[in-house]
Picture (cartoon, rainbow, N blue to C red):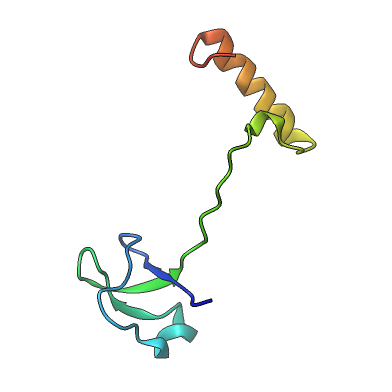
Length: 82
């Protein structure tokens, strides 16, 4: 699988081939495909498809409690449907 890179400035793909000699100094460099400025590129994270309801995730602890509290609050305020 080939690594895909996005620019730090615009989160866009490179316009041309990247210069890998700058990897030890922060990442490959090159020209941004959107603004055409010289920039550093970072590895693009793969997109994760998720159709699950976050309220039904198997999380534990503080974050799950917080999610439920926020959900109840937003339902009470009428911001979201139950």
